[in-house]
Amino acid sequence: MSLVDCYMTRIEAGAETIPYRTTSNAVGVVVEGTGASRVGNETFAWQPKDIFSMPHGNWVSHRCQSGSATLFVVTDREVLRRLDLLSEEYGNERGVLKPLILSRAQRGVSKDARTARTRGHPSRRA
Image (cartoon, rainbow, N blue to C red):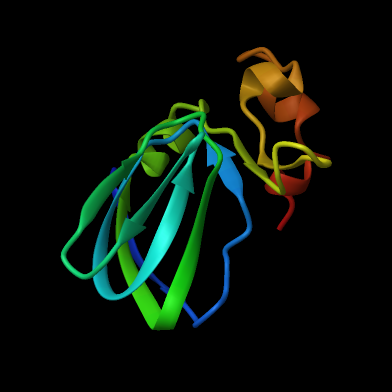
């Protein structure tokens, strides 16, 4: 049973990722390329072999400056998902937020009524 998410993401030259925030924490390792990341109110440049953290609750976006960049990311997302504590939003902090996964509290669902009241939720559809 894996409780840690690991993935690699490629960012093309001049591209910027969609800002997001989540209740999970992440650590990023720059595999190749150069760029910058915005985490909360801080923006910092990175290059290969740099390591940085993305604490929960902060808006995060990444931008590639030249060529393409590859980031290796490790998160505790799966632990929070299994505990039904994961919440993710994509968009930006000034615009309309688009929740992807809502926690039980955000859905207004108690543990006892969870299966009966969440069947229509988009994240539960097959």
